[in-house]
Length: 261
Image 1 (cartoon, one colour):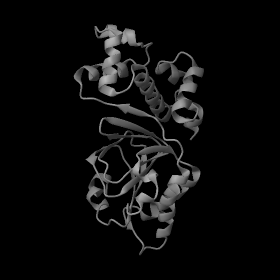
Image 2: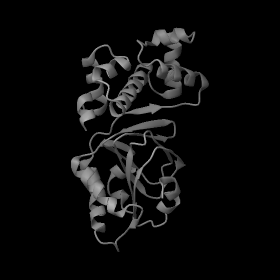
Image 3: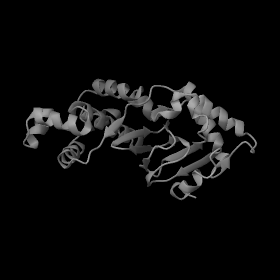
Image 4: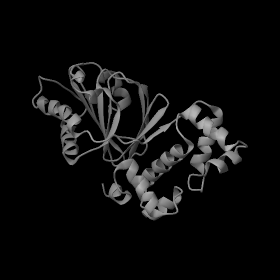
C-alpha cells in the first residue's frame, strides 16, 4: 500500500504508531493527520510545503510535522526512501518539540532505530504489541537529539510578478545576479524590487537568492557525481571557499561531508 492510499488508515487508531517505509517518486497532495509525523529521508531529497513555505529535506535528515498541520509532500527522486512513523499525540504536551515543524540531521542512533521499525511496515503498532516500548522510547528521544533546525526554507507567493522573477532566478542561478541587474531585467528600480520581495515573500532578495543557490547545490550534490567545485560554479559561486562557508552556514556540514553521508 502506497502513502497516498494509506492516508485514511493513518488516522484510524489514535493511540497507535503507524509505520510506513516507502521508495517512490511522487507528490502527496495537501493532507493532515491526527498524529505527529516523523519521516526520515534516505538517499535523495524531499520537499514539504506548508502554507506559502517550502522546506527542503536532504538525505540523512528527518522532519517532524505536528498533528493537525496541513502539508504537501514531494519526493524528488525514485532513489529516495521515505521512512515514516506516525505517532500518537496524547502526550505531545510533554515537550515543545512536538508542536514545532522542524528539519534536523539524523544521528546514527536515530537512523538505526528508524531502520529497525521496518519490521512493522504498513502496520499500526500499539501497547498490545511486543516491543511497542521501543517506539515509545524513539519518540521520547527526539527532543534530546534535537539539533538546530535547518533554515532551508523557500517562501512562495501567488503574486504573478514575483513568480516571474523567482522563475527567472531559478533559470539563471549560476549567473552573477544582483538586485540591480535583476531589477533592470524587469524594468524596475532596485528599491522597488527589494520592496516587492519583502512584501510578497517576507525575505530579502539576497537571502532568497542565497537560499535558492543552497537548494540547487544540495540537489546536485545528492543527485549527481559532479565535483564540488563544478557545483559551486553552477550555482553562482566563483570562489569555492565562499561556497563552502555558505553551505556550512545552512547545513552545518561541508559540501564534501554532506555527499559522504
